[in-house]
Amino acid sequence: MKAFDIGLSALRSQQLTLSVQGNNLANASTPGYHRQVAGLASRAPLRGDNFSIGAGVDVTGVRRMQATAIETSLLRNSSEAGYSQQSQDIAKQIESLLTPGDASIHAALSNFFNRLEKIANTPQDRTVRQEFLSSATELINEFNGLDQKLTSLARDVSLNLNDAVKQVNQNVKDIAQLNAEIYRARTLGITPNELLDRRDQIASQLSEYVEVDTVTTADGHEQTLIAGGQVTIGILPVTFRVMQDANSKTGIGVNDLPTAMTLSSGSLTAMTTSLNDTIPEFKSRLRDLSRGIVQTVDQQHAQGISDSGPASVLAGNRGVKDVSVPLTRSNPAFPISYGELSITVTDNATGLRRTERVIIDPDSDSLDDVAAKLSAISGVTASVDGARNTLSIAAQGAYSIDFAGRSDNPADSSINSHPDETGILAALGIGSLFEGSEPGTFKVRNEILENPGQLAASVTGLPGDGRNIAAMASLRDVRFDALAGRTFTEEMADVTAESGLRVQTSESQNTQLQAFRQRLEIDRDAISGVDINEEMLQMMQTQRAYQAAAKLITTADQMLTELFQLVR
Image 1 (tube, rainbow, N blue to C red):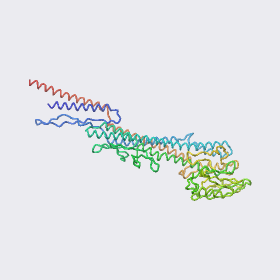
Image 2 (cartoon, rainbow, N blue to C red; image 1 turned 120 degrees about the horizontal axis):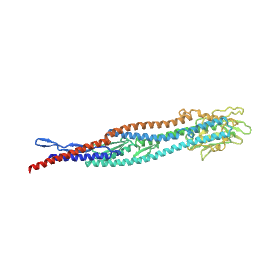
Image 3 (cartoon, rainbow, N blue to C red; image 1 turned 120 degrees about the vertical axis):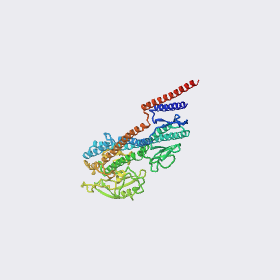
């Protein structure tokens, strides 16, 4: 009887369907699991006695429910979120370094100029001078500390990048192995649903680091595309590595290829961008700001006179790369321009003084040439320290020297507002307040820290004259072209605002991406997710179908038994 075959096919089909449904329930909370559905199809009918009667049911396969377009969007969202989250983490660390407060660089910068103004009002007060020197040390320490902390941040990001690349390589290796197993299963006629789930779960993890997509070729091979298809992972893995190009830019290379990939999203992109652009940009702006403060303050300080009057020796503390080549090619600490340098030579016995002027041409004059020009002045000797490549200027005999730009007439208290048109005094560290030329090397000169009377407060050397200190204090309000027309305080505020803006931008992007991801996950789960209530309902339907198939077999058996009884 056909009824037995039909009933048995129904029993087997419903048993398999029940197994699939049970597997769905078992994996309802398994990350990356896709709901499976048993596909049922009626058997081809058998012809007999002019009738075409169905032969039962078969399971044609177990289908993995997947919304390809939605899952592709989720992979892209994961890559963009990885980039945005990593960028936000780094931006927050930078912002925390620049947050204004009582012990911040903002307070130190304000205190520095406030104390200068206080000295200008009471130039002879030793306590006020000591307070200023403490604030100068604090400001320099803040700049040095910020530079060091940003360097440490870059080092930490670099270490994290290396760890991330190791994880990427492990993910790529696992994906290649699974791709091979998936293809092998298909060649054996096995539906590799569980293997595909595992592969897609790893691909989702990988997408946090770099842009990922998955495709299936016509011959059944699985391919995972990295970075927009720049790298294709089939059944053989590749090795990613952190590399440096000729310009010391950090990138991600593949195997032994000499050029880095072009990345657009993922945390690897955020980390390389931070190492190549973000952190160097903040370091550069803070470097320019600190150098600008040191250069301009030192330049003004060099044009003043300490309490002890004009100097007998002025030793530079900043050297050049080569004392015999033009200054522009000898890498001075600060730029030197063409112009006139005025030096006042005072006869200590008579009090008479004279101002001598030398022309400095950095395009043709070397440090040796500058020393020779100064030595040609009567009463002055200039020498170059061959070990340090620095310049020292000394007064001969009973003479003393200064660069205050005073009138040759002792009764005339007026001064030349630009005794050094070239900037060479600050560049060579002659008569400076600070030492060093880069963040990390800056410090207040020990001679001044030990003897505040060495502070060049005046332009005359007379008690109560604080005009040079006042000129230094007025630098607070000067706008500099190198700082895009901003003052020192405005530049510091702008750097801080930029760090905060980057945090806000990243947070906004993260919020939008998270909201979009939630919508995508809802749409994906509606197709691929396991709804326990729905599965239970379908399981009850399968149970009834199974009971009906069993009833069919029982009924057919009773009919056959009755027939045999009639024959007897």
